[in-house]
Length: 575
Image 1 (cartoon, rainbow, N blue to C red):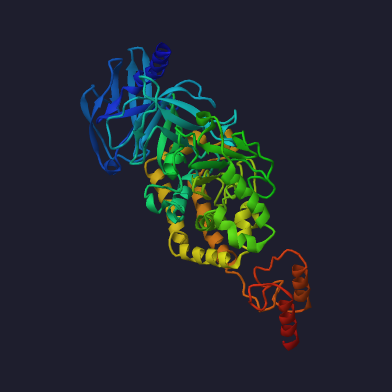
Image 2 (image 1 turned 90 degrees about the vertical axis):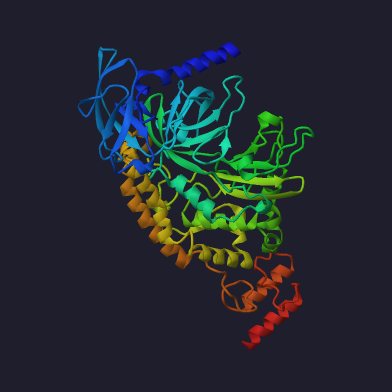
């Protein structure tokens, strides 16, 4: 085993020792892109906009090295005049005195991440990762295992790939943590390329919006580091020496992120639990659940994410199963929803989630792409919720090969939300009024239209300023991943701004409104008190479902009986 490990490590490390990697500028690695003949060097943002005098070093295999026509010996200083994002400094050289090299050096203020290994698949394979941060010259190769990730974005024909990285100790392949960009110290990191997003940053910026607007989980008062989603940082990625564009390098959503309690291995006892809704099914919408096989790690679109089946050899579905079954029962009774939904779900977070997905029209997140977390099932089964994978939002098409204007128009009503607990609770007057109040509070802060537009423009300007947008567009325009369309990120940003402004004009006027006030005796909620209300009252008393949101208690004595019928008749006769 140890020999095989050393062989694998040697194979992936050899790539980092190639002639193309030895160029060093001011102590910063310059990473070679064989697609464009480009050396990409990460520098602090403060270096841009002025001249940069730096020592240039390169390996013995390179001779006649020249930048902008000036021959530079290894160890000699060169002044890069007027450093700007996207600016190119031409390079010529000879490799081993036989091969002519022609290319250019350019600078970025994004970290540059290098991945080296074989053909990465759905299964982990050994790899080397180098993370070149602009403020650090100490980029060292790190041993890891990498696999591709994603569902529709991970098809065999996909080109811009998403990755999951697990860093390992090369001595024994145990987990090894690393901290990047001031985020958490951990062994697992994700690379999300926004492959089908024509803006490329909908997921990253929308996730940051959620982190800023969502109330903390019900259990988090004593857990200051519990987070409601994944943090990340934009980076530029090269895969086996080929430029892949910019990505969000982010933390996964897991137990350490959500701070749910750890599984007790000694007692083999469940505590914290995490489930993921990964497919569109009636079980996931909580409307008509399939039967559950309690020994399976999946349930008709739901996945058990923590603890992992592979680690504990069993699964525990009770908190989610009971919540899903309750949602179906409460669908028929407003009173049941009002009294008990908060036992199964974290209602303040659910309110924020409804506002969030409805406001930015996150079409792929109202039932699927949700994580449900239970803090400690030994004490409380209540589930809180978090979004994941927000690419299809803010007017973005469902997929680049489809044009879906009716589905993504900014004035589309939010009746498309089918997650049963979220929808049904809007029939409870007190809850709906709370959602309306919360929405209007958020509109003054994080959901202010100008603030939202600035949030996205700031990210686009940040990527534009270091030249990353031009590099991304050059790499992926007219690619199959986006159905051979032009990738024009600035134009898409203009579209997103227009969409946001029109969206919130619409939602302010037509959505997130308080529950209407009804005259006493208006049992059916049509705005009038007449014989139809008496008939509905009689049906309720005889055993029919009461969907009146409390209006059936006409005389306000906390009971619904013949006395309410008499009061309703009196109101009609005296009106």
